[in-house]
Length: 168
Image (cartoon, rainbow, N blue to C red; front, side, top):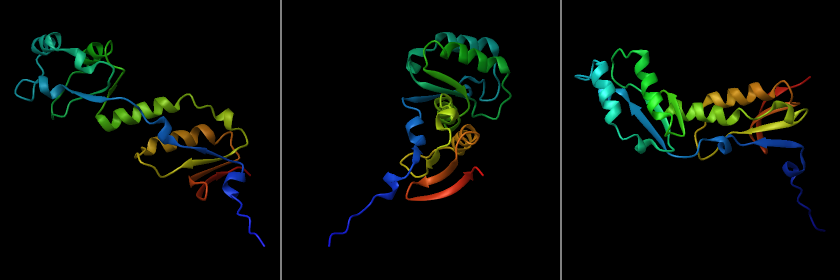
């Protein structure tokens, strides 16, 4: 007598979403205003503008760039705007924050085209383990997008899930 092995996961009506597929691709860079502060504490407008004018912006070509100031200094808002204005024509994307915040913002941007309506009445598993650490904000975002439309949301792997939401 032959035993037939049935893949119940493959036969189930589960739709799996792997957030790693939406993780930002490409090089990242950080533009730190601290490198342009007088004595590491003060931003002098004339010196800052001159430094930005003489800078080789090509080093940021097609990169995802975070603008930050890692020094404990008071930075006027226009300084961030001026840096962004110089980066925008060459960089792929420009956001305020550190590299972690940059990756989170880009991941959320990559998730924005997902339409919850496309998952109407489906049972969805949001993949939980992978090679890349996915920020919590992405899991919150995908849950917010899907909940109004899906039959259920689960977290983990199709063979071992944690229930998150089930429509009554």
